[in-house]
Length: 340
Image (cartoon, rainbow, N blue to C red; front, side, top):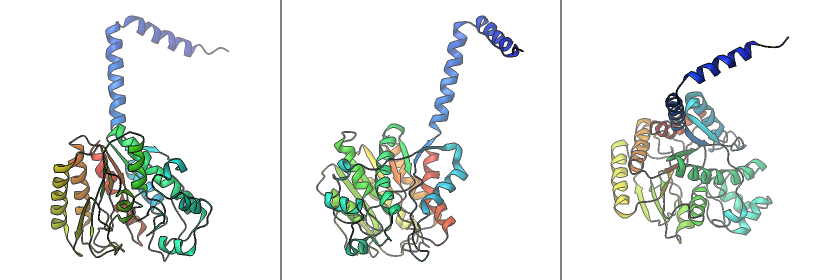
């Protein structure tokens, strides 16, 4: 038996359409478009890959599940506000702009010696190798997305200790240097500011970018924490151990004012490390949860009011309490959503 109910419904709609004037169509389509744009504008682009987690012993300082822990935390709290993008593997042609080809090949072929692995201080695995190629491209995708949307956040990144020809301090490849160099090479931007607020200085980033005059590195870090041999970047601010909320935020605001007097970057790569937290396992500053939230607010407000795109990475954060760590890392995402 034929279904005539659908046909009747179609005829009713057709009659209604015939009745409406062209102006009604324009009004209806305009409202529909505005509502669509409103929904899109309320979505925060986040970049994530399910292969970011790595196997590490429970006693290790690095939390191997921190990426999926954070992703689950974000989905639970902000699922309606997230536009999830997935990176591909970094290509050799791009990666060799920031890293030595011989070193890249050693990583690719699992040929890193004990000396290399001792510096990296992570147990080697197939997943770590895969993650290393994915994560750098993830930050690059985050940056390119932010150029279109104004802000984008990476559920990873901040591998700022990796140097040109070796890894260091939990970092294999340097996603910040890789991203900055490739953005300029592809003529997507002319000037890049790398603002690194991890408790540890981004020594590898400074080392790789030192000969790139269009990349400006600003690191605000603990003077007495790892790495113990500090590098000299464009702007380096060393903080005394145990600095607390008000003094830290004052230094940050003054630093942003100094940056503003010298450059107007086309994009900011922001390392929002949360190892500045008072109870962080590898930190030695005394910032509260509230101060980290304020820090991120100050940074985003400063650059977004100037319409400068910001791409964020999560940087360092260390705790045996995985839920607490995920909550800490989620601060930058929560703050970014407020700026949509």
